[in-house]
Image 1 (cartoon, rainbow, N blue to C red):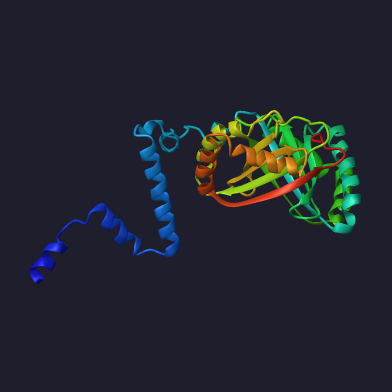
Image 2: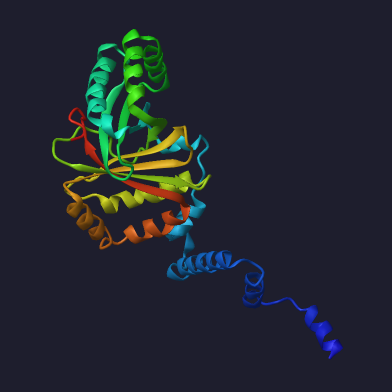
Length: 292
């Protein structure tokens, strides 16, 4: 018996036994992740023996860009700013009126910035306003706008009044994905969904590859896609998708219909593992928003 045990110790375990031994040494959560990932890999291999043609293989073998991810994913010489303002509930109406005046001043002062969307949150973080600014010409225009905003006397007075009405505020500088449609004004009346994702570091390129294909399965005659943006300055590895719907029922029907289109399930299957956190807001346009 001693000789048999010694012989067995010298044997190389087969892959299946080796996998079971590995699973026994890791946590339950990691075991599930290991089995789930292995199943996905096996499914890809079995469904397409020529692995170079499989969806996962294309992602795996996609050449990484020689330039930065931002340059590879965005072809526009335009930067955007998203502002999130948490407003004291009792000041929301006054805040909207003040911001209407402010966005007009931004034009009159020659800042070069353009307001492309302005909203209040209907479902999500209550008493929050979301504004999206566009800076055609990129960072030089953004720098000019910020300089005017900091030094002009009218803007200084505006900030004093505005700050009294806010609980907090934050912003991000973002770029637009090149495969999403450009942000264009829309006539009334729509609700908008802002879906925000925090990705695992290093996965932005994979996200772009998947959604470049996946967006095709979400396009209908109703033209729901509004904007796809990803962060450059501020909180990193953030992605924002904006969709337009007639109402919440239309949103429900549109999202359910996407599952009937071959390919959408694959987009979800391969992008969900890239996400650390996600958040959805339903937005209502302000009276002066170009997106209505």
